[in-house]
Image (cartoon, rainbow, N blue to C red; front, side, top):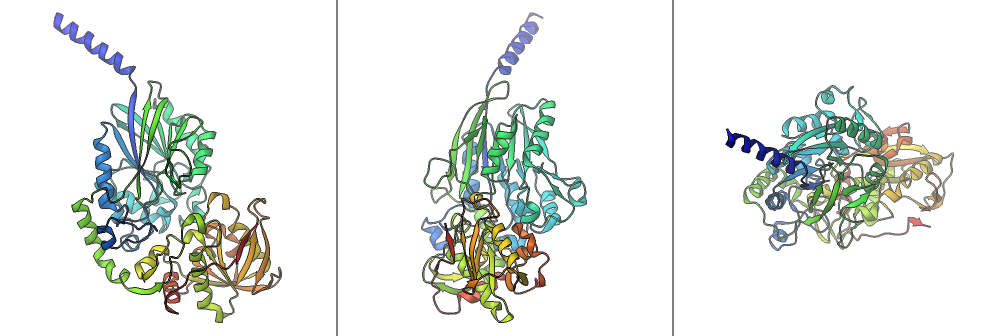
Length: 518
């Protein structure tokens, strides 16, 4: 009897000390993987097996799983989460849609992810198929999906998981303008991120959950706004803006970036880094320490043999298409998002020139390419179809239409309206020139618009070419929806670009001042 009493007292003592103990958690995270199952080059494009063997490549699923397993082994308490945009970016997605992503994420042991805008590129149907295939919750708080039968009973705003004896609240967040960025259909209503997050925090808090992590595919800037506008959030794992945080060259801020006590992290994109945040909470659920950084997934990380073999097997149906050499580049063609979403870039000129060249004999005067549609650079030398498809993965078609000069200027204003956020709507053009004043208010940043060397006439009708995504209102180009004589079913943009590249021997990339900055 005495032994039983002592045992009970000891247990009570242990419980008391546990209740007062700090709680440490390692949050491993990725974002914006964009179907980069194979290693990428320094240009975030395809990397040959020869270059990979020489240690010149980064990422790839075979390295990423090794890095994840090694990171898990360093801690006794961890979660693995994703900040969205697993979909879209290479032929793997074009061919397999979400199936290969689901297989790899299950293998790597993800605990949750948020919906990125590209998860809606093929509508709710493909997203639902992916959700049915994965072994973890997919979350999105800032949308009303009750009117979409495919998602209404499956897509949760938040969830609670248990780890290390504690409950963790996880909340998903996606861009509020996803209806402009992708193809979610007409049945989903996207809402304000801060309000949505606070609503879920309040519910989780009422349930007794005091450690709350937001998985956000909303961009570094929006994440900071959400942190400032809410209470009760501890960590935001970000995505969408492909932001590198840390102490290395090119980083946009500290890892973690702390706003209103919230630890904000992000790990660039394309599987090039694995984020590792070590955070400690006190008994009240408050963060008392946070440290870590993005781990570079370079040649020092060994490739898992089984995963490498599986990806090679999955690649076989794609090889004939992508290994075909279609052109040659005299120099590297700059397609980096940090450049192309802020100014004229050589990749933008290539694509816009290619579009205009294809349809110039149809009475088309100008071309507009959204920089968000340019997904990589191309290095010098032989150019394969696979490289072109990595730059232009969306299977967009050429769209021709007619608009007034006033509508053209309105479109350019939309294109530069979010330049400080690095938004993908920034316009790369051909057949025209214009000047941008980024310091002016959005809506009044454009001046000196010239079409074919003469000033734009507001009432004149111009022929324009873009891609079908932009023509139908994508990236905020709603002014094109009612364009005259619209035809959205032209040739594939990647094919048009490849043929243009091949026209005159080695392609010489260039910029010529068609976009000037004040």
